[in-house]
Length: 429
Image (cartoon, rainbow, N blue to C red; front, top):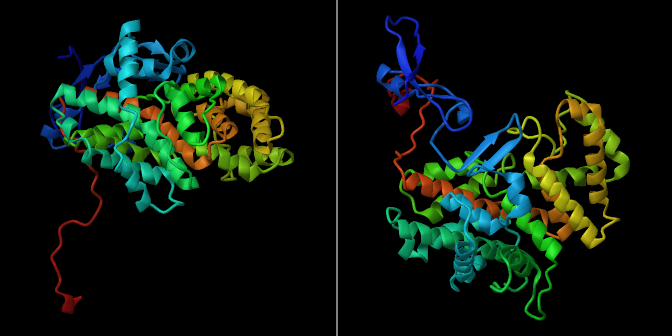
């Protein structure tokens, strides 16, 4: 128990309420308001932006200082020295792996990249023009119908098997959703390739010729996965935890996370960047749209600048910018009109006093959108790729919750509807 207390004085009550205060490793202290229920009261916090819904040891964010730590390791160090699957191990197990542990972990992921052959028939139930995220919601949730041997959430081994299956199969399902939309044959995974190489192979390869995946593009894709691996208690992670708190199986919980991620205010941000670039249309119109962005009476917003969490700068953006520069150089792209608009907007944001004063720096979504566009990935797939990278974060938080003490999520409400009233028969209304 905490020795620190907060005292809450409530109008009309003689005795004040004492509430425990807890301190984490990092971050602000937390007031435990659970005792208010016994007093016939509870707190009101729309969006839970001032409420800690759980205790976690996985990820820490300080938006004011631009800090993002995974198990204590800064995101820029992981992006520079690590790779996605090593970061997956870190998020799941709490420590960086030894060489032997990493080799075993990567090998196990490779063993699970295939999906059940009957899953292929699921895709025929979707319209050809269905959004890939709609497909992912359905197909990932359906995995629970195929893998009955890993649905006992109280069994640590079952949870571990489910984690491997989800991390390994998400790129396969994502690539299948793309291939289905363009009418091309599905590509089986190639386990001689790295995680990112394999994804690009399944996305762009065809059975008629061997895949030739650029190491530069694969490294950029790996960084996209890594930089999106986890982001603390965001909307989709909180959704996974809430679904999991009911005892739902992990595949259903991850499907719920995908549904939450689909929202344009969450995972759809990099998709919105490309839509904005298309709306601008030409470099000659940039000044017009920048002026609109500065006009507080104009609803237009420049997407991909600033961040609701990071009030200073997005620590992932620098790494993503380097990857974007590498990709554009590798592909020799010099005449793509949308990328020209993006590069000009970046110059303005980094030099214009308005953007500097308001700290509207290009964020991770801005640069990841540029990379994915340059590689040739359609805009509709952007959020799917986000989901592939975020899968490990969802699983890590789900597993942390299930393996500890938890209770089913049950938020309260401030009721503002009618008070009790009597039913009126139809003929008297």
